Length: 395
Image (tube, rainbow, N blue to C red; front, top):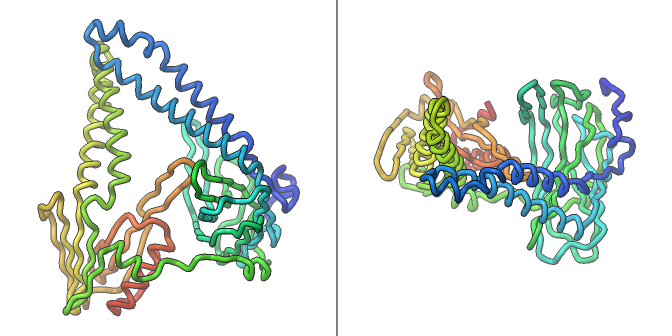
């Protein structure tokens, strides 16, 4: 049973829930105005400072770019709201049941464009609030790809099975559990994105109607995964490769952040005085970020799963830097673990490493940076079928 009177929560008065997305563009607009106003005095002083030879003053234009990006995001949110308005979520069972199902449907008012794709994700997070920072830790996550709606359809049906043992919602305080259901409709122009904080507690409820009416797209087939990981069958086993540049998105983000830190360091250095010490620290962080970005972009991993041994070799821009080899007798099985996460706009992605668990040594990485748990599990099952190596599961 719930540990608190969850029905007193304003958004949980009824099983027909609204997302509250009406305010999204106003929040973004306010943030954009704040960032632009904060940098405006320095921006207006750029001509005068350039006349003095202070080229580092140009770094304040980064804040104006951030403000422009926020303005663009606010405009896209406003356009999406004008096109679709509010989307209502109907949950059944109510509340969603750990050990049962999270199921129901979304109710749309206008029709979706002919060309679109639908993604649903559910995420259980622990939110910890401190005096200086907030931290969100993902406890569990699942994602569904659904078939596009027909022109006459206005309902999106879904059904997630929630295994026993997951944490239930807890009262909002400095450390609490929250569940979020996110609907994303990708299309030309601004995407439709709606997020709902939902009540989830232990129970046994199910929704057979939602299970029947949901039109999920089957998980990626083995051939798609094999293409992504460059899997090749050889006479003595199986090889796979994570090619140079496979982590380019992460590398690009680190590079841009590093360059921004470097520009700030130059600005502080030119200011002189005590700011020079701060500029050295910021410059050191910038150098580390840029080197890490270059490392990730140039990294390549080759793996050979032979019949009697397993070997991996790392390259950087084509230069071999490390090799590791173990006998198949020392292998316990395939396992995977979470190694990080990334957030882009309203989308959060978890990344995993697929490894070989060994009997008397640290695990051997086969590939890193696999997006989503479902994809990682599918890749592990495919490799298990092809090589005969058993599955250990998530660690």
